[in-house]
Image (cartoon, rainbow, N blue to C red; front, side):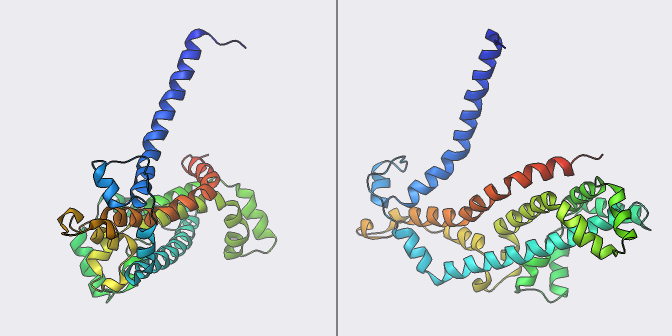
Length: 288
């Protein structure tokens, strides 16, 4: 079918627009990487902006990976993210499964309470007082438990499970399956798209969190990567250094290398979950 002139113009406009948006999304990451491998002296010669460096050095990455503080922060972030994500997905799935049962006593009251927490938040001070009262200050548990379950994620899971055929549960119960067995053997395999989606939401949120660490953790050895990165961004400008700055690991390169280390895990994980992410969001956002 031959397209009209207006359709061809519209299609080319869309291509140009999407290309521009893609460039706007990719270029900041590219620039951060370029600065992280560029000697500081060359960055200064180019007025602080460079697209294609003449010299390349990975000294900043080497220094960071050899720094015990950075490696410890990286371990802390991985540990907190993995444990928080697994715990959040399990609890969210269990809560969503219970709420998806329309005959559950008190279902509407629980849903109302959950919705109230989305509209009204207790605030930072009550949350800090709660963490202190529980004796969780300066522990990993304060970071893991402070954002374990998201009501938004629970509602997405609930909607997804409600769309599963009712006769699946009836057939499983007739065959002798328990509620727990039905959840693990039937619901969980069919809910992998939404589980992957919610897991990605939890993982990204916990990986990027830094404010809770500053608020609850006084021991810097327990700080996650994002909190350490925030401290690095407050380092004085290397132009204040008196001497041969070309012999130094450039401060800007160090900062950008730390940024790259903090975003690479998310960039590596997302492509593997993309197909589940799209399907899970679509199916979990509509009600059949």
